[in-house]
Image (tube, rainbow, N blue to C red; front, side, top):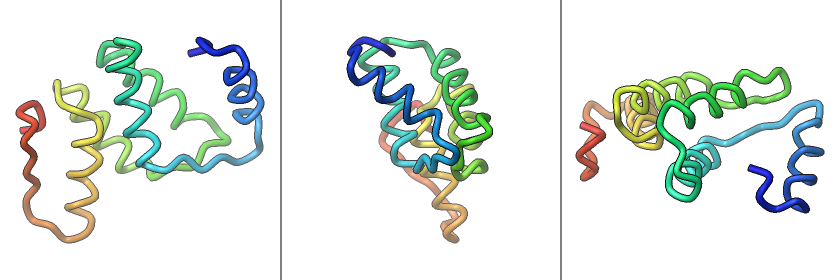
Length: 103
């Protein structure tokens, strides 16, 4: 977000690395911060995550990211989409959340 010039410069340098692995936990936290702290709308958060995940030097669990983005596009929470995907991938039959937007 470039709100901290020092951290922004470090982040920009890091994003130039040949290969960066971004964990799902980091992406969930990133989506939360973009929404809560920076007040980005769902479409804006989705665009940022899409751009990051689509970068040629980024490795992440793309199917889980896509599930998170799908729930976000439907008005839900990115993290709940990722968690639901992971639950199904791990053999769970149902996903439950107290977050009413995730249902």
